[in-house]
Image (cartoon, rainbow, N blue to C red; front, side, top):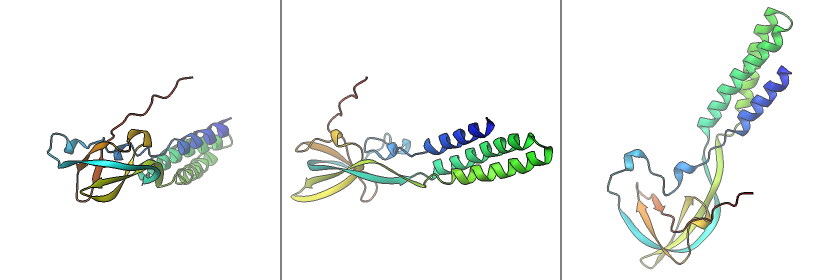
Amino acid sequence: MIKRCLVLSIAAVLTGCQATGEQYQADVFDASQVNTQQEAKTVKILTVSPSKIKVSNEKNQKAAMMVGGLLGAIGGAALGAQNHRDTAIVGGVAGGAAGAMAGSLVSDTSLVPGVLIGYSENGKIFTSAQVGRPCEFKIGEISLMVMMLSNETRIQPNATCPEPTKS
């Protein structure tokens, strides 16, 4: 029974540790960027193609290792305690190591849905990869592009996605 709970707990930790990438969407701003002047311009969207964006998942990987180690130590100690106190200690250490190792299986990167936007500016065509969904950008329409750091473009969504239907 305890062994099954341990395995299920570690599996839950591993599957629940995926970065969403929401913090990289064009319409998400850091607190330091609020109430500050940022250069912006308008661009005409020519194409929108679905893509995948690779984002860091290190924070979730470290959390999975910690939680996996803790759950493994508790589970290993509980299993070992059924026999003898010494086996409880050995079981706890072995379970903690196994749980941490299982947590390390969480990838340090994650792929999130994105778009590659082709746009025209001053007669030239450029592209910008954004975290987001194709339905957030309308081809042939004008969108605001916020200029952040050097070479960072954030093309703001100019459309809304339909609400998911509830079953």
